[in-house]
Length: 299
Image 1 (tube, rainbow, N blue to C red):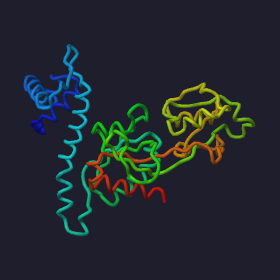
Image 2 (cartoon, rainbow, N blue to C red; image 1 turned 90 degrees about the horizontal axis):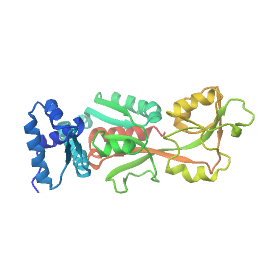
Image 3 (cartoon, rainbow, N blue to C red; image 1 turned 60 degrees about the vertical axis):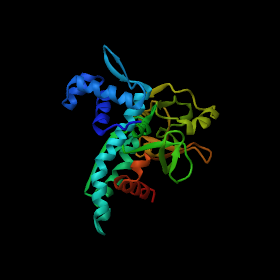
Image 4 (tube, helix red, strand yellow; image 1 turned 30 degrees about the vertical axis):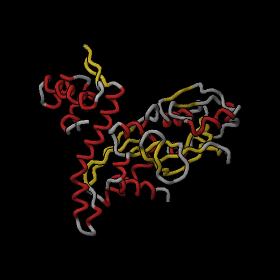
C-alpha cells in the first residue's frame, strides 16, 4: 500500500473535524477540488471509503474514523519530533529538559483535585511544558476515547485493570497504569438520623462496571430519584438535605460541614483511577514526566 503523506493526513483530519470538503478547504487554505482530489487519492491508497458524501457534507465511515484517529496520532508525532530530538541531543543534566504542548483529558474530579498538584510540580521542573487540559465526561468512550482518537496525549480515566503496572487495555492498543484506588462512601446531610431512608442522588458517570456487582447486591439502595449533571452538584444537593449519595474519594474532597461521610466497610466498592496513553506517546519525554508526577501523588 502506498503511504499517505503528512499533508494528506491533515486533509483527512480537517474534513472529519469540519464536516465537509469546502469547510476543510477554508481551514487549510486550499481549494475544494484540491481537498476532494486528496481524499479520493487517500481512499485509493488505503483501499477503503473513508467518508460518506452527501448534501449535508461529509462524515467519516467506520474505516474513516479509524484512519482519522491514526492520522491525528501520526501528526502529533511529527509535532513532538523536534522537541524529542533536541532533548536527546542535549548533554546531561539538560538531557531530560522537556518542552512543548502536553494535551491532557481528564474527568471532572480528577481535573480538579488530581491534576493540579502534579502539573504544578511538572511545570516547575520543566518550564517549557505547556499543559492543555480538557474536562471530558466518563461516558461512552470517555477520556480513553480522546486518547485513542488522537485528541489527547494522556487521559486520566477510571480503569477496570488491576495492579500498578502499565498494560495494554484489551483491544484498544492503549496503555494504562493505575495511579490510585479509592473507596466509595455514603454521604448524607449532617446529623440526619436515618440517611438510608433518604432518596438516592446520582449522576450519569457514577457506578461503572467496577461497582455494578456491588450496587446490585445492596437491597437498601433505592433507584436514583434525582439525577444531577455531575458529582459536585450531587454533593451540593446532599448538603441541602435533598437526599443521600454514594461517592468516591476524589469527589469527597469538596465536602463541607453540611454533610456527613460514612464508610461502606471492607466489602464496599472501590474504583481505580489511572492514566491512559498510546504506545507512541508513552515513550515521549513530556508524557513520561507527567506520569512520574502523577505517580508521586500517591505518596
